Image (cartoon, rainbow over all chains, first blue to last red; front, side, top):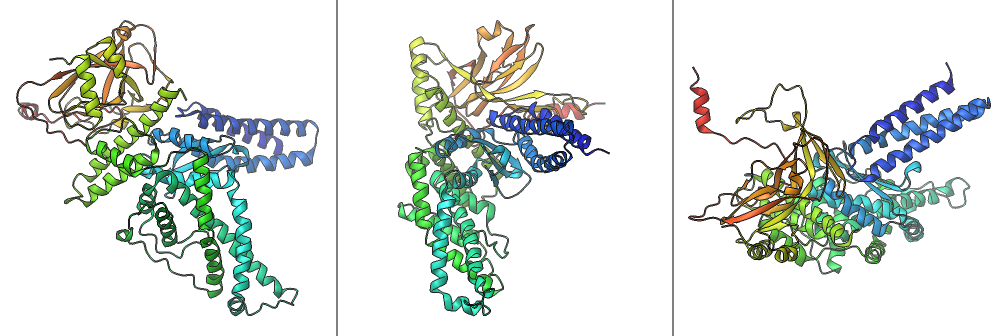
Length: 411
Length: 203
């Protein structure tokens, strides 16, 4: 058995798979472009492998064979993602306006791919794939893929791409490092209580302090990124982000929260407080009964997490400033209550809006109407049919947004 | 009576501004061109969703109520972005939707007519042409190529025209405003009590 021929076979099979996928119907060229990019990666790898074989370079051949395994391993889930992005269960109307926002805010004009995934939690592969650095891949849950009301969640996922692409993460890391060091300094007695082995003069045990700080900083950076993405989605979609967030997550799973995510309560209160500074009162989510997330069991873990959370709380204003600056300089349209109410009136008349200006107005109107359905007497009656019809009007309005942009400006 | 260009423009302006007595057409057609050319119809554009029938393990398609209900078994959906093409081959048939969403009040009805320039190229549009008062949604177009060469259809192209007329006599519309669709569908065949009796009376 030959390592070379096995690797060749694997490369040919993956390239054949990509060729097959290229025959699919893509709503925008981004999916096809991503496939071509991956095809080029494997084609280049095959050339290198052939050359190593020709030169009888065993070491290089072995290394390349190993690389083939890694690349195929990493690429297959992405190929699946791209395939699912062509499925007609997706609401393809959502892609263009999101791409528009990505163009306005992200540097390098990355191409957006929106797919429906067999994963309940929306997620993003935000330019972290070595071979697809110029692409942003956002996955929405397959069961909700056609729901325009959940579009604001894609805004959160786009926020992850912004966090990396615009270097927000790097700046936040430095600030949080400083804040955490300061917090540990101020809470040294408590630290010593939780870490009784700590000895500042001992060559080994003195390391407990920087290790704890590093862990707090790590958690803080993750949590700050999540809050940044919440604020980014809020800035584009307004209160409809909070509704979409609550729809998908409430009442929570009742588990101990992961250290990398802020608690639901924190996330909601940050959004509410930010909205308040803009004179917007966000709805009370009390009726959805978000569960109180139980605390972690070990006191020293709780301490490390508390330091992280406190440091993040100190920078939420600056996160919002970053978001505002990006959205303003990118010229991204923000929702207004007057336009949202106008669209609500149109939806109630059974018509999509003929003059939409921004996505947030449309989703806000959608959620307002959705909430009205639920507050009616006999709300359950025909609710699904009514929500379906509302969804059709929202998607048509989003399509009108794209149509007007193309027809009026040829863009 | 068929509405004139001016009346049409007035009614569409009212309808799009949420006047329940007006006619809504979204996105708004070029009303100034309509006024200028004085035509008595509104040109509509081809939407982006298509549905074709396909071969499957099912033996046939029912044309009476209560028949096959799963349209996915018989059909395949396509999304064609603006400006992209869908080729309709000779003797093939496709369902599409108008780009425009129409809402008619209780006092107006409409009928869909193909465009003569497309007809001359073999493209026949819409065989169930009536649009009833109270309708809300995108119109499903039944498009067939009865010519001898394939024809390129482009999403967003002008595809048909809609004539509107007023309703005489007592007005009634039981349609709910929340009933529209943006994609073409095979749709359910409405219950037919008489056909039901005829079927049961078989000896």
